[in-house]
Amino acid sequence: MPSSLPLFADHLVASGVSCSRTAIDTIQINNGRLCNLACLHCHVEAGPKRTELMDERTTRRVIELLEASTGITTLDITGGAPEMNPYFRMTIEEATRLGLQAIDRCNLTIFFEEGYESLPEFLAKHEVHIIASLPCYTSENVDKQRGRGTFDGSIRGLRLLNELGYGRPNSKLRLDLVYNPLGPSLPPSQSSLATDYKKRLFEDFEIEFHELFTITNMPIKRFLHQLEKWGKREEYMELLFRNFNPRAAEAVMCKNLVSIGYDGQLFDCDFNQMLDLPLGGTQRTIWDIESFNELQSSTIAFDSHCFGCTAGAGSSCGGALVSE
Image 1 (cartoon, rainbow, N blue to C red):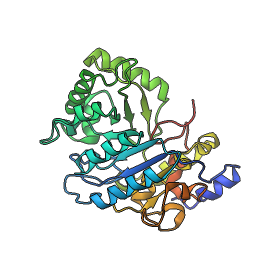
Image 2 (cartoon, helix red, strand yellow):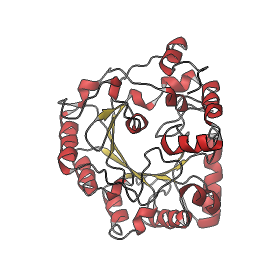
Image 3 (cartoon, one colour):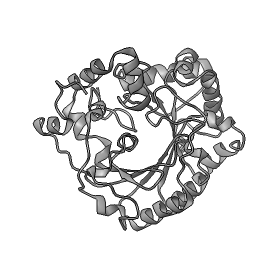
């Protein structure tokens, strides 16, 4: 972080922004680092050679805590490619049993890997909300960020989901897309970019989806390495700081979310998890609590990358935080 920038927590206080957790309604689990892709912007540094996966004991403990907690409405499952965890389907089935909305953060190409061919039908059966990464509507830009052939696989995946009813107007099978900038810049207007995406994807491929989420690239892990390679690290951090938005800061996702690592450790968000920055700065695991309600009003741990969530219209796992 550039030495001229203030600490994020100090800047929140100076801006009159509350920095405590409120009611928790979302539990996000990162069930492993294994992925069939190795994207340039990936803050998890996931890939085909990673071996870290949430085991059955840890998965069942998460389910126990969900059952013991009140106010939780959503189980958000990410990775890696979360579907590659051997207990992914069990997790979805248990979330359905508990009446929770399950979210699968999907890269779309996983549907065409051996052994995953029945996955789309399984997701549709359980009405899983799919949030899929598609950083552009052109093959050149997608393949540059995610690997050769990824765009074509993503389009095939979207068409398959549309055939099952995902993304169609008035369908309860929700399909949302995620955009990340290719370089060291803030995302454009979420609403205007969504209009472009809908127009191009329908005209070119007859693909439909519900919403587009714009997510700022966090200056950590692979994207940080790219910034350093470009000589843009300090410039990017200053860009995030200059565009600090107090309204976005009031709405950051860590206020109503708890993140769980593949080994059961607790974090304030998936980004903090990748930096080994524990929940509230104190190391705790899912075996140290009896319900997620114990974490209400707990302190949130911040660092300089948090400026990424509060720049411009803000950024979260659900896209922009405030209207442009």
